[in-house]
Amino acid sequence: MTVSTRKPVIAGNWKMYKTIAEAEAFFAELAPLVRDVVRDGEHCEMVIAPPFTALSRVVQAARAANVAISAQDLHWEAQGAFTGEVSAAMLVEAGCTFTLIGHSERRQFFGETEETVNKKCRAALAAGLRPIVCVGETLAEREAGETEAVLTKQLAGGLAGLTEPQFSPIIVAYEPVWAIGTGRTATPEMAQAAHAFIRQRVAAQVSVSAADSVRILYGGSVKPDNIRGLMAQPDIDGGLVGGASLEAKSFAALVHYK
Ligand code: PGA
Image 1 (cartoon, rainbow, N blue to C red):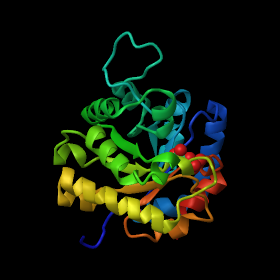
Image 2 (cartoon, rainbow, N blue to C red; image 1 turned 120 degrees about the vertical axis):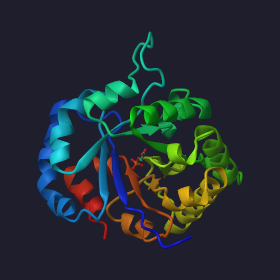
Image 3 (cartoon, rainbow, N blue to C red; image 1 turned 180 degrees about the vertical axis):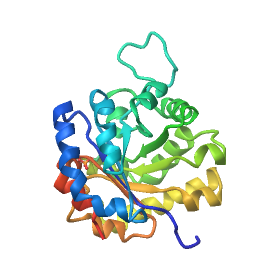
């Protein structure tokens, strides 16, 4: 691989945490803490995925802090009788520029499949939203030696049929399910091995240049005190962070990992 020019991405996934008032308070506290990141446009991209209800209310404050707003999920249809669902166009109108797709909690608890991940990717891309596509194995799968097979299946299905130009806005997040919310992070070496494997799969499935430029984020118990070792790995281009993204000070510390 050529020398990386991939800009790091530090993304926070708030899951079902924070009311609108709490989300607003977060950005008010965060803005002064990341002012230097705003000035140093080269350092990293910052993304936060609040719950749907807070999206449109925090967009301006987030933009002022140079933070892009992401949805946590979307439906693939443009509109229709799909109670409880939200379309890509609705998210764009609310001010989102990114959306998570295929988070393991969606896969575990809400029936997300490779097929729905693929439909959601296509809908997001068509609307100009940048997907952050999550993949990762469970503990049982890792212990059975199936990690690479699982990643191959998730990438082949979730990103099926995407051309190189379609693929280029996509960010991939490797999140081993056993490391999410458990305090049990993958070691930097374990994460690096999975990231390198994902990059190889993208090379095989899309193209070598797509593999070279795609940002691959690690997620699963990333904290201010372990992010540095992870970011030092050549194929880790950022973090997708749950718990440690909920406090402004902690998110700012993650962003200042260097
Ligand atoms: P965690 O969550 O950082 O709390 O482990 C990560 C995620 O689910 O994206």
